[in-house]
Length: 102
Image (cartoon, rainbow, N blue to C red; front, side, top):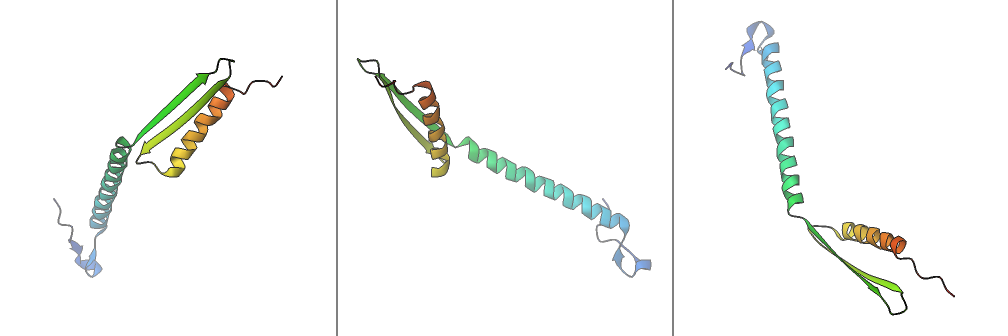
């Protein structure tokens, strides 16, 4: 391995182009490794997240459908849980519209 502190004496102690190039390669590898580690931490964090939905749809004796929805999440923000819950409510509204008034 080349000593990374080699200098070109004719340049007054300034690192050579080759040394500078090697330092850039080392820095690029380190940056790539840090990025990989950050991705691994994010993936590990995602793996520990859990989300649970409970939907109870009931039909009355008159044929009216009603529903209740519960959404629990570990390692989710309240905003994320509400977004997911709102999406379920919207889908249930489409799937089980209120009966036409007579």
